[in-house]
Length: 226
Image (cartoon, rainbow, N blue to C red; front, top):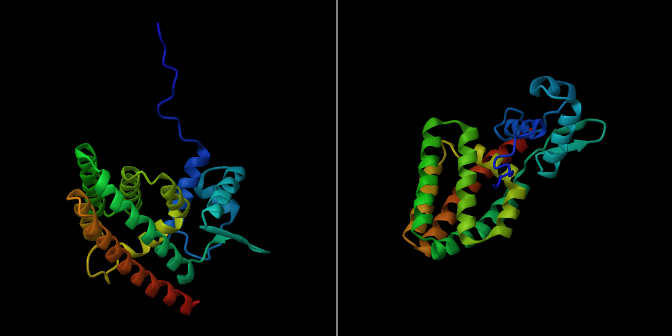
């Protein structure tokens, strides 16, 4: 007789839930840039202890979403164009490389899964829930990097994911887009599916160029208003 003791789906801890909720609150703009993160208030809003709040803040500090100022304490990091431009430059290099290798290694099963990810993204855009949209977008990109076998590159992306998601939330539904965010990503995926590496690479460049242009306008305007 054999007994499988492996826990397939480990339970989410209170700290992880608090971290996720606080991260989403920052990414979606519920807590805007520069806002003080007062422990007592966060404890009440999240329903957790100060120890849990402090741990969550430390994680978010490492992700670049929170910074601690002398005599002021933790605040939501101010995202400026200087930082955003570097993130877009890194994304361009890593994502173009990933889509090229993804087109080479994608098999029939992978194609079906990629189309499933794209359908989930379509549904998320239709629902209009930003948290779901960001989560599904991340899953789609992770799958592309996984098929490309770019695991180290994805580790880099993950370290930046908080700020990437913050920029994505800022730009993805902008009325200034010539082409919707979903259509841009759809073009990337369709190029991968037909194994056209050059078209996929060009689609990534077009997507990030438009997103970065919008982000620059928004962030520079915010800087001028401060």
